[in-house]
Image (cartoon, rainbow, N blue to C red; front, side):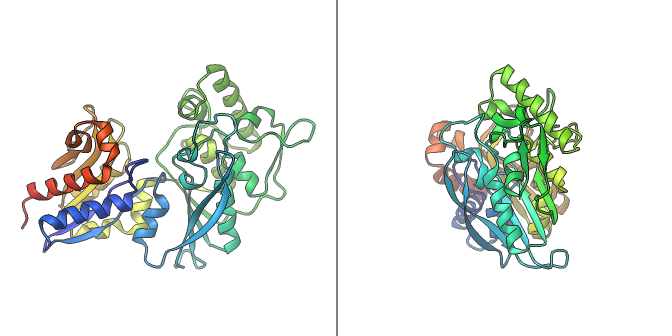
Length: 370
């Protein structure tokens, strides 16, 4: 029997990884009902991280919570409780930035006032539950607050020269004169999932590189925020040049200072959901993401999944919302672009599920079945 593994990332803002895997599998089965389909929706620490674990880990339990979101209003979300294991006897918690303090939660960008408080509140809820390990996905952040909102939710205080609390978000960073970490909660085992290796400060740092995506476009504002991040790193005894410290607007650095370890997101998610074992006996592996471009070969989900398929001797296929001309598709036996199928990017976005289904059908039809 032919075994086909479906391991896409989310198509950001249009369809989750879990739904994408389901649609592709249904499309394939419509062509050949005899195949064995295995769904392993993937993530790299960004949008869909909680959903990927929920779909792949037996016994995982969603834990609803309401947090203070980056738009200044309450957000109903959840963290995920994973069953106890030898290395996490009281279970593990999966918390992602995207669903608690993510940029998709904003109606409009808030470069100075959005912060990571909701993410910290979800972490605190998991700690209250008593978990042994935190698995934290920090992609898709809405702010450049250096992780101050998250650390505040865990008990830290950020004080100005006169001893008052500074404003939240990037707005308050330049005013931080000292820290009060006396009530900061103790970190358990903390694994931080990210595909970002940027330092905290400088020309490749959080403010300069990722700030504009969050509305921090004025060079003077970027320099002011960068100086605030540098001062924060000094107070946290953190080397700002540490790779990954600039992830999620500096949340990566704050988690390093708290005791966390930064790990490559796609590889760690794959390990924790048993992707390599699922692919080991596969004939075909289908992966994908919203935009496959020149950056996608650098640790992103599709290239990582394709490398696992190659090791297992399986054929790798790619579906993407769009495939850029500079993208290296050499890892894949065949590809499908939803934009090309639909005729335009707008049409593909308007009915992603329809065109994803069509892409799955076409890939099934062209693949020789044993």
